[in-house]
Image (cartoon, rainbow, N blue to C red; front, side, top):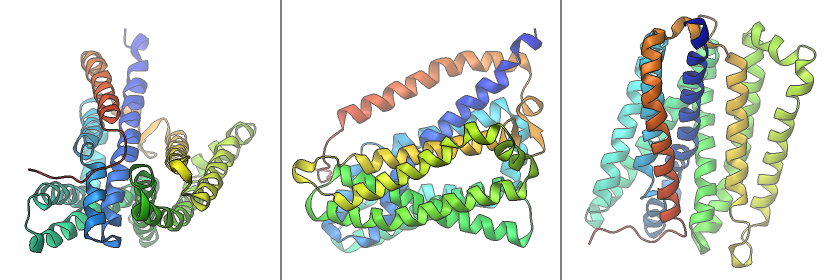
Length: 333
């Protein structure tokens, strides 16, 4: 029976990866909006917050699902990863808490105190984004404690924050109009460049620090059928840049293209990382089969996830359908 269910760890790894990818895209844009907040005036800040108002809390559900799957399906990996990354995880949680508190209080605060909550919303967004990027950098380098690896993790934190700012700017291009939309286009051009630098940096460091990953990408014939990944990524980046240069257009045409390109870049970058590390869930330490829970436990949990995951997907799709369109001021009357 165990041999027949060897696919279960792979299925859980796939569902966990899907949850984290959706989180990086959905919560990525609302973290990005928070990072961009100081660059706007008071009225624009209200419109920016309104653009993420119906979605931001639900977006974090995907993080809970991804970490939950790690805990119940791969407890050995959960212990290693979260204990090694204890401080950045704590920093991320503090940032997310600051965002939640600031979001609710700024909408009801008096004018003279709203600035404080805006600053806390920005600080929480930046903390969460930087922490996630730092954790990614530590993971890529196999939790190497050397100074160089830690420096790369800090660089990764900055680049992830820039990537979130990029997708946040692209979100605002779709959800806003006039002056704020033009500002978002300008922000998108700036952060696209920084994001591309981050992707190139990770693409270079990843195979250099790990010979196994180097062999997976540059061996023959793998190098030929993997070549479309960086090529398509580069095409999407160029298309995004050209689109940002041509916007805004009459009738708000094509305002969705930068966001779609950025989502595509994120998907390809995530797929590249997943391919690089599979089947390891802890780089070069534990495979998904070694870290997995008992087969009976996985099977029991699998039935529950088969109900929960489609429900979250349907709810997410429904909420975006209901609240689609341009943002209006967020008020509590």
